[in-house]
Image (cartoon, rainbow over all chains, first blue to last red; front, side):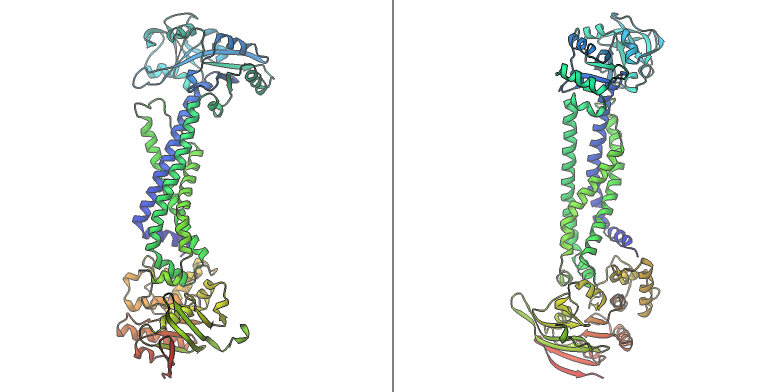
Length: 372
Length: 229
């Protein structure tokens, strides 16, 4: 019998305890992984907005609670366009509208047709709307397919009917699942004339993007630049709060799990005192006792982690279909999430098992053998 | 200390006392010598200190004072008591103390962990030992599937796992019927004839009569010694 087999037999022989501990670990992992994948999905969805335009970087108002609450006025946009090294700065107004139950978070972008090329928009059917048209719209090809609309259809948005003049493609799934309106029209609908939400900036070939972003930051301190999704938190405080909540919940889950594991292991120590005494009496070293007990804990942690990740797939999929989260939440199972699951399971199990393991290793063989 | 070690003696106990908390004296200046290859029975009434003596010899308890030298090791100066328990002595308890979740074979393998043996070597050795105690064919049975006598023979096989010089048995026949006791004693005699030093604590005079020497204890000290055969 190998040492590993001895560990598995011990774990298997105490089925109720092992199953209970596995589920305790699994629920903690489930909590951590589900929070991780949902926050990561929300972050990805939110950050997708900045990647719609084919830009070197995006400019938004600094420290807003939500990126879509960002406001950049005409003067700031002009200032961006005149920043040395900037070749174009496309201002767009972005809003989210509930279209129907299947499209609760529909992205609508106000943009001038003259900026389509700079924004990476390609008209694939029909034609672009007129720059100042009041009731014209272009649909992304995914949105058109989802809504069953085509060129010439009428599209109800912003409280009015709009004629679909064309279908566009941006090469970005998030952008292609939305609609584009003439900028003055959508500014009018939202009563924010001259205001845009984001500015998509391109720099001159051969120019350092980092240098240009520094110039923008220096010239316009109320604005911030975003080059990657990871920098998204600079503008969106909600995301920072969400990440903090996830970190806090992870720590809490580990601590609660560790207490449960520790409590169960301590009960197990009392239950197995005689067994530990026997092992010490037949010559087992303290180190080997520790290896045995930590090995059992490790096995339970791995089983709990596997079960927790499996459960989190089901829970995250279920959450994504909730009406309140449909279209917003796209669970994002990255490699990082699986590592976090493993760390959580190992962390809580090892923390929880530490004290009972030390106590077991320090047991006097005689007292342990006399223990009833 | 080493200059006082008598290499002819398997066990050399001098002036050993053991006082438990509450001033309960279990051993009171006990002296005892056991030669290599000797089978000794220790008898006496309950509470006379027989098991305490055996626990001290097995290094699972330590004396309050006095000197205990076993197989040439002064127990007061051993740092690695686990190694001593693993290699120098084999311990058989009254109630066998087999782990119920492990098979007969695995129970015998238990003391061999940490001896540097491979899983295959442990298994081979355990199979040999089970054959030696006439339990071939019972390898995969759980302790609950064995009779009391069979369990005690498994306990002997486990005690012999690391080829100890000395076998310590605490009331090994206390829970056995007469047939199982007879079979168990046959096994001890076989071990004795093979050169094993055996110290057995027993209440039963007929069991003690199988030893070369019977030591009678009372109130924590030796009161009588007799040659049984």
